[in-house]
Length: 449
Image 1: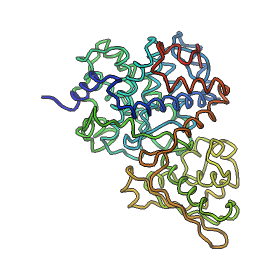
Image 2: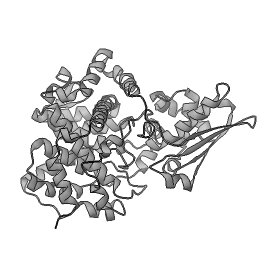
Image 3: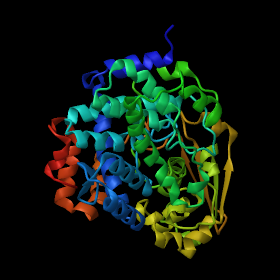
């Protein structure tokens, strides 16, 4: 008797790049560009530079790029480094329906294996599309526990599927692979990000590594339980797993096209508060100074309210604090990387204002999540006047799209300091036309980027 895993196997085996709807495929190209620049910028952080140096010193060599270094190594090492770097600045894409970030789970492994094998850009995109869709659907089919970080969980399955497509795993072994990958999650917790613990960035590296190892284990003859996904998603890490949701409309409706690309470098739930603040500031008759604000009142859904820390440890912690984000955006009068760097994390004006943010969950707003992401922000001024703003749907969601030119502007702003303007523009153009690449080892016409 067939079950949902057999349906997944049919989808993985039969689906080709031409089956992906044009809009979803266009979004995937944008995801690839956005993920590349997230790799490169994150790789400039001191911790990532130190880790990459250690990995390179002990690596046996290979063809997979460590993006942002101009160097290459084996696919497992490169994918893990890229995945961890891609999380560092919290600028990687995501998908609310998938309850996480499928791209940073799948693309690092797919890119590394495609380069190691000299696969074409079309083969790479096909693997990414199918791996993303499988991971996203598993993530959408269970109730997330707030304490469990989704990186390194269902993403292992998506990475394994993507690698299997690139390596031509026979159909009769796909079910075993999916079940083995589903039995191999990492149990990371969200307190890492609230505490500013950069260990959290390694969680995505687990998907990149374990997705490849799952295939190697299967090819070596290791076996898996009959269904390795259900226990993980229904008893171990998550709750209320719904296999029917995994396969509903599979192949006709693509979650891949319904994700977002970040325009603010912080946790996605925080974006609702920033959008509401920007709405309030747009209504102000004159520029608002932080010194004139007595307090900020916020009503939000559970996840935005959960990110309530004001005892900021470092720059990484700033990205997961709704109060800090509001205070920093208000002080900086901008919403870029400068709002979440070490200087911002130590700014007494920002920290003082963050402590005057009153953040409360609204049960009705929580019930609306994730289809809608309502949030209210009220600036209460020293003179008693009030300035209100509201977000109903965050910028960049399918029902509140932004001009794709903003994605390119983000890429250039983040990529130019790493590569220079001309090379950054070339890499961006190459990412958006990656289908035309005959050999991913020669992506963007460079031995390393």
